[in-house]
Length: 397
Image 1 (cartoon, rainbow, N blue to C red):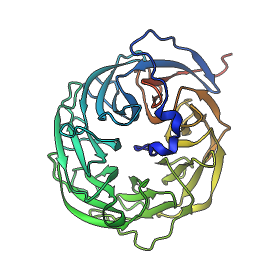
Image 2 (image 1 turned 180 degrees about the vertical axis):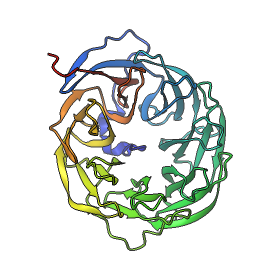
Image 3 (image 1 turned 120 degrees about the vertical axis):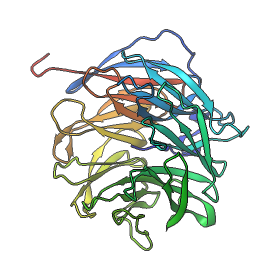
């Protein structure tokens, strides 16, 4: 899942001047047929323009909730981290909110959000990178809040995207992050098990502020590998199991061109990770089929979506066992639902209007009814929109 939105300049003046939706007013829930499924659109107001979302069971009740990173409409009010608890009926209630980071009076916007159990207490924690040249962690308490703040200053400049994963196979999440220090590079640091990190290792010089980091075992050796997306293309760094990722030095992009959201998932059904990514200036998504050894079949398969797709999730929506995709179209004020038609092939999009400037997506069973729903952060408003999935049985009208 993409954890970082495009910079505000990429969204145009409309995002910065968007009228804020009235807070805490009664909402209707329209029902939208969407091919093989039907979605009820449920809107929940929040106290700040939402930008990034991650699903997490914050109160340990077995139903996923949301961690939200917000920002103001003019980007001059301090960003806040929010804990939104699911009401089990498609809505969310803001249970907790704090500035991120707490000691800064002015931070233009936070750059990233990633979630993992960093202190090994059984509850998810949140890591964010921000323009204060650092990144910080909020520790979850299992009661619907993230009260404890810890700060890291491992980066030497502007802090960009963050990826969390157990690269050294010691059972503790590690961190990979981008910084603009000395021109720009990706660094890796070892998780200490208390929510902090140590022992930074240089991975690669990457001179693109919009770099995004994802990780998975791409070559089947049991260790995590790294995928970077930039304005130039997609690059892969294969790691040694139990060690740090191998440097990208000199490795060419496996596919070139401006890329934003990227998901690693087996959509081709060959038990190998594939790369599914958005091309925001071409209004389409691509699929690079994995060979299981860290290489990919090129060229990609292409599928049309809405206006400026910046984010994507891959999940299973219609109960047929084939992965589907949901794409957030920032300028289109919509999401595109693409059902898996056959391995590695998506059907034509079903485009659903959701509201201004969707910038965050999270997929989980938020209403505890057995199917997957999709939460959308509408950054041009103060709303979260849930596409509440209601499967249409076979043969139903």
